[in-house]
Image 1 (cartoon, one colour):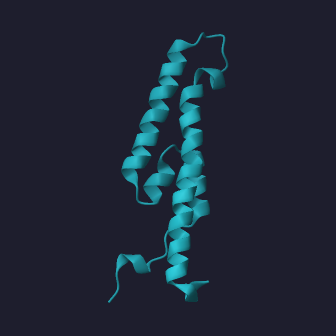
Image 2 (cartoon, rainbow, N blue to C red):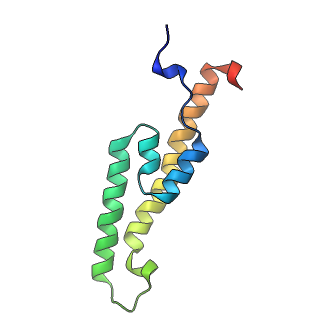
Length: 97
């Protein structure tokens, strides 16, 4: 009898690249779309808040700092989730090492 757990999970490094490229994409890739959409939403929300509460003389990084901060927090979180899934799968399937 085969189930979906027999398939290996996505490689954690692929999740890491996705998380770096797009906020929330790493979470969606590991099967947690609500968490990913939450990170994407708050990245955008806080980027807009800091954009409109800072002066135009600030750099792009300074004006979008709130969103960039949330995005930066989401990257290791997505990688950690993917690594846990991958390690657990490898322990259940030692012949695939």
